[in-house]
Length: 434
Ligand code: KIV
Ligand code: ZN
Image 1 (tube, helix red, strand yellow):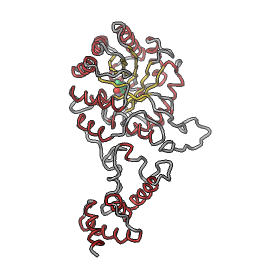
Image 2: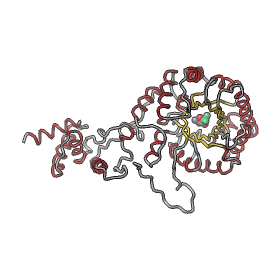
Image 3: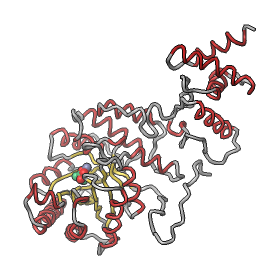
Image 4: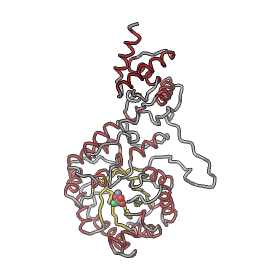
């Protein structure tokens, strides 16, 4: 029995999507150690990378981009440490990013010698803007660059027979690329790598910069998939950034439009406004009754490692994770939560359906304790909840308005939040001395 009810969809008979829903989890690829790391004021040390690596494995990532080994010594050494110290469990692939240049490709391969499972991630920029402003290259020249890179990768891989390679290509700045050109360049790379249904190539379509509304990104993904000659020879991956604040929405719509794989980071670290936040995405799925295949039951551990390693705080109101997101201060919310929780706890409800709480806090290792906190916005329901939950005193309904008023006077007088023990003290003073 699922705990969360799938969200209903509206019937729009003339549309195929967005009334589609996400039925299964995509393949996840964490880019915390690469995109996340390259955006930090102080990039991770080897020790910090190892700490993040361990967390990512425990969460259940089986594809992890470990870095850009040709770009920095720490990244190179990190890949070597994972391999030399036997830290990569069977079934987990490390992914390494490289540009399409010979010496960088060779150095990238040196970093992964001896690894069991490797995804070599080749990219070059394809947008009109980058072609004009940065590279001053024609479409043909950009395709030649990608094809040459793909050939070099394939040649180099022959020197590493002990490794099972998979290949990934990203037309970087895809969101600013003409769609027909994006298809053309990806197909040219796929041809070099001899993609077919047995040898599926990861085609990663990045919103390197989020340039439009999420439905436009999803349309781009759908158009791309529909116009590929060999759709079945590709795993369509998306890699969204959050420049317009819509990376989660864009990724969800992209999955509905045909993407099968998602690259992102914990809590949305990454270049500028960040990569898509995988925690939010996964828990959005979870609360619609879809198993995200990631273990997020101890969200406090994720926050702890994330904040220490990245030196970035998780916002108090971050979806599912923020310190305040399981807290209601206002009286009407407290009352409604109180009623919903009682109904759920008495097991008369098949699904978790508690007003104002889209997820059971205990599903991410949070407690109910912090749900009701009392300040001047609070009401009698919240006060009754604290007395019951924290002190085991079930006040008769008739007492609620009077004691609620007493507590409200206290909060007005003090001008701050009250601790549960202060409320209990007021209760004892008012009623137990009678
Ligand atoms: O955002 C981006 O386009 C990237 C690529 C290297 C995939 O990070
Ligand atoms: Zn990126």
